[in-house]
Image 1 (spheres, rainbow, N blue to C red):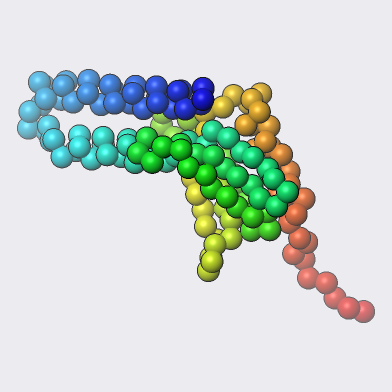
Image 2 (image 1 turned 30 degrees about the vertical axis):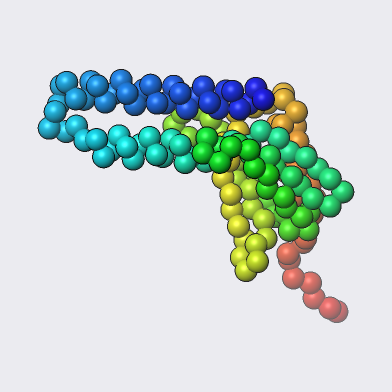
Length: 148
């Protein structure tokens, strides 16, 4: 629950930052001020990437528990044989790390991006490291073999 509270607090700070910048822009540069840009930014805050707040590993599935402001709590269930990779992306402007999960879809590989805001010593981070190790152990040798 602490991850969700930190996520909500971060979104609140982003919204306050938007409001302060909008007020400053309105008073100093009325010609550049646009309501449409503010509405688009607020919508992007609401429909932004989901927060990954928990991972469960069962005998044949990985269950990723996610939270978003609009959809609230959801679960992404990936069969172990369909799991491809998990990768960190540290490209977010507001300090949250992003995580990209790739798994086999019906016709192609599916990539899903999530925010994570856990500390490196938390259980969530340890589970992510475990999944990265599982991924590296299940990759088959791709080099061609020759029969002599």
